[in-house]
Length: 113
Length: 119
Image (cartoon, rainbow over all chains, first blue to last red; front, side, top):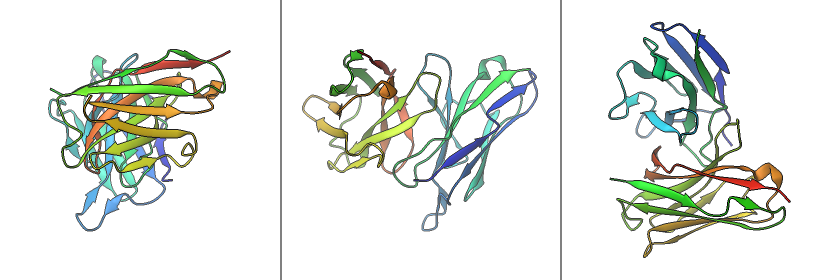
């Protein structure tokens, strides 16, 4: 299985400040034939299912605010929230879909400082 | 509009078999590339990918659970069924089903159903 490791586990950030969450995969999730990184980011608020934010490592899902962005390639990825809003408090997960099982990271809890 | 909804027992006893049904609308599992997967989440813990079934009946399982899990589809009813045998208290979790197109991300999720394993 590909192991997905996120850092940090918990991230306190002040409103309006930048939040950066990292995700590292135990092997590359870059498919050379199409040059795509098989990596997604989800946001989960309490009592709700995960919501897709980013796919192919950097493509924002329709309707997701542009303060959310994804970057990285190969084994190292980052989710950035450029200016934290109160409604962004949630747990964020990365997931690789390069190979089954499509493993998730352990989650990063984003909170207001 | 794509929707998915999980249904099944909220409480099962240890050693029993769990059967969960995902009823969906807004897409067809006969459409090329479409898949429905199951993911679970123990209380306060991370997401765990369990299994997926595709439009062509291709099935993939998590190796750690493959001996206990079966995924099937009933295209006439727009349903996907997950069966998990020999349930244990550690299997207590919210179980989600989700839609995907091809080898890709899950773009639509059900609300989830909490299953508690206890005697």
